[in-house]
Image (cartoon, rainbow, N blue to C red; front, side, top):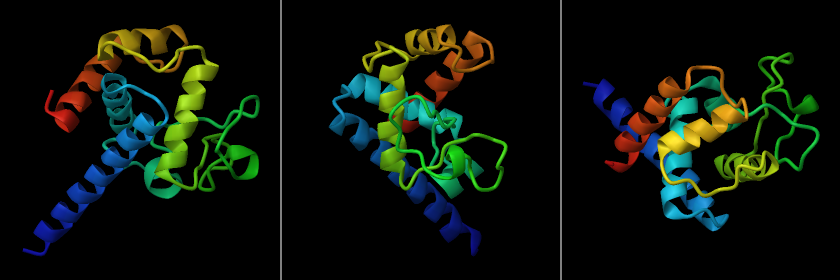
Length: 151
């Protein structure tokens, strides 16, 4: 019986992260459709906000530290403490990670307006953001968007 409160707590914390990402995107000028897509991406990249990068370093987008653009990332060369060779960014908050991702999108000339998950996944693939097949990534984004926003 003790597992039920832990499951509820885990679900509540994940919902709070999702809402924080979505609200931050809106505050950064991202429209609601695109904000839902990008929030779904954060869920997809982070295993629904449960991976180590998220839990230890608020890095919901699995971003690498980039010394060539403005960034909210901090640490020794931006590398996550648990793996000095990784090059993954670490952030003080989920909100800073989300703002950094908006900077990343603009730096990569992707903008912040996307019609749907398929187009967004295709654009990210063109910029070599991920290595998996386009169809697999797009399917993952669609799944996360449906799960988070009942769409």
